[in-house]
Length: 350
Ligand SMILES: [Fe+2]
Image 1 (cartoon, rainbow, N blue to C red):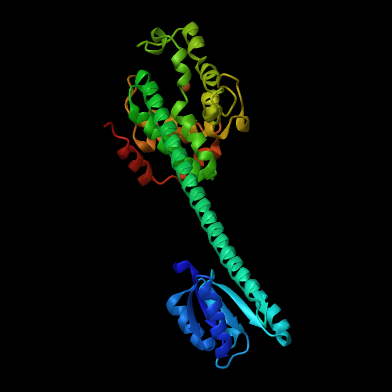
Image 2 (cartoon, rainbow, N blue to C red; image 1 turned 30 degrees about the vertical axis):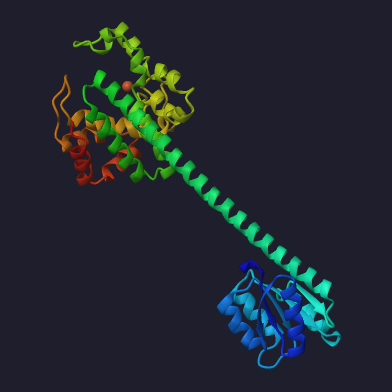
């Protein structure tokens, strides 16, 4: 059995022969060497699981052999044989990775027990390491599975939101592309404004869902072609509150609440539903106000023709400080024209 190969290294031929006989009769397959150097050659060629070596030998000592063997194969079991004068070296050998040391003259039973024990311990260490590696692989796999499930979940959230956002859009403004453009402008402005990367998903969700409360507005009002009566406006203006009530109980949408609830607030406090003023209005809502107005002006709507970009920007500048947060307006103006154009181009109706 290959696992019971043993390498015996001793420069004393008599001792070597005795050891050979002992291990042979105990069922081991023995490899023999005269000194450390030869021992190392045999070891490298045959990789026996167990080596029994004398300490004092010419050419290469048992300690050197032990070190080289352990360097070659960290699982190799080595037992050191030592005379009474060499006990200190034998103890040192344990620190270098020897499994055991046996005093000469050798007691046969003691030697065989030490050999069996060394092989068992070696096997145990190998199994423990393999088990550990298996666990590590499992952890890596589980982590990977979890990451991919999480990614899938995020993807599902995102597509659900987009579908919901465009369904809302189609019912109201009429184009899904509007939603995509505003989303693109809002993120570009947020970056210019220094909004942290981690806060951007909430902003994106808020932008997509800003008018979700219109679900609660009757079609007769929402789709009315002519101007609304004051009573109808009162109903229409409930949509931010309705939206907030709809999504605040959904954990992954909670971050969108500030925009849904506050996207009709104005910088000077004349907006609704709460009449918030200045920095009381959540930043996401202030960003949304600017980019939504820009998109409304630069695209044809049922009730108004598109204005050129510079006219729309001039109008936004005029309303900075009344409708809009002036600092957000500056951030929006820093978004390069080319990027705005790219967002418009990519948001074309499929
Ligand atoms: Fe709205």
